[in-house]
Length: 289
Image (cartoon, rainbow, N blue to C red; front, side):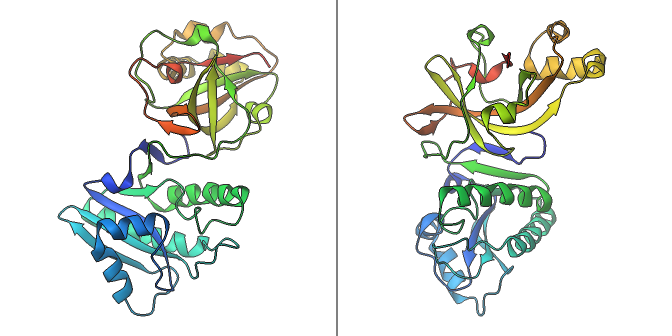
């Protein structure tokens, strides 16, 4: 997904090797949210956090919890009041840069929870938390070489905008789900305007009664010269698992592409792993709009 970190459907507590990043405050409070879960599983993380003198914004503490697994306590917030955003973007950036250096020196992957810094510390309202998360995603990309975001299966999600319709004719009978980016196409209007979406948000892609969660990526205009470009035709065909000639049949005064990344099925307000027989996310969605 261009300009966005990789997302995997996995509980971050089940990561077995690498660096797990969590945001902590400077007031020695670790009793809610993911921090509480991490402390419950690895008590040494809380012990080391409480033992460190004089926490300051931007500080990072690396706590080894297994031979090949380390938890990084990143002081990205000073206080822990929930009435307004506590995440300090500058401090979080500074801390994550230190994590990246440690990861590079020790050849480790970096895992961050979905919504890092935007849960309890992200703001008072859902809109504030979502805006915080959009900013944090950009911070992750600018500070960590190859960040991996873990999204816990069966978790409730904040869904943005309107559902993106997928034409039934574009669904193959059997296909692997969630494998990389796809491109949603619209005619005459920008897809982000049609569906009221921003890059980095989660939305619903829908065909009939089936729904899947996709992350919104980069939007771009597909020009006449791009349609004629053999390299673009090849990349598009590989991404969509389609014949490049299908691209040449698209005719419109304006044609827009929107990268979308299938993540999982959306059932009863929760995200669940794809079934092997599901296949919405595997194909291009063409909508005349």
